[in-house]
Image (cartoon, rainbow, N blue to C red; front, top):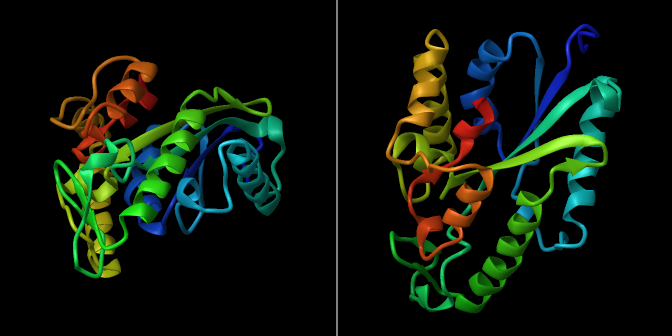
Length: 227
């Protein structure tokens, strides 16, 4: 049940290890609020059923799902924080290259894939959707912000590239939560003072990640949530 004396901060994330990594620390930092996670179980911004025109409505539907699940009202929600991976979607088209392997491969300066057109289509759609979300200050009447991990959370927090198994993701999540649960100040310093920290205001950080091949590099603007 939701504590009626606390406002809800609702985090929307792609997978359960995002919650496992962040929820214990965020609950410590936001002790005066009720921290809740809504897991999409996939990438909403890459979903072919979601368009630029429908994505804000899709976010609203996810908010409503969680609101009804826990029985709180819209005015109980202080803000919604949406966590996304960039997946290199802002890179120039000539940086998506053909290879003969089975899987998509991400590098510092390119993406290689057996299906370049499919990746180009995804990049175009997802980049437009992320631009739309980054310009969205409210969903309905609820304050909303979207923060990125490039290419994904494990890339930013653990400097790990390539495809990780579910077991590896769980281990990373557990280790990270254990490390910072008793050191929230260390967590905030890690976010704000690391090589991956993107400087500038919210709009600046979104302008930055859309430039060149930055969305393939290790960057995040998540620290801005705490400023």
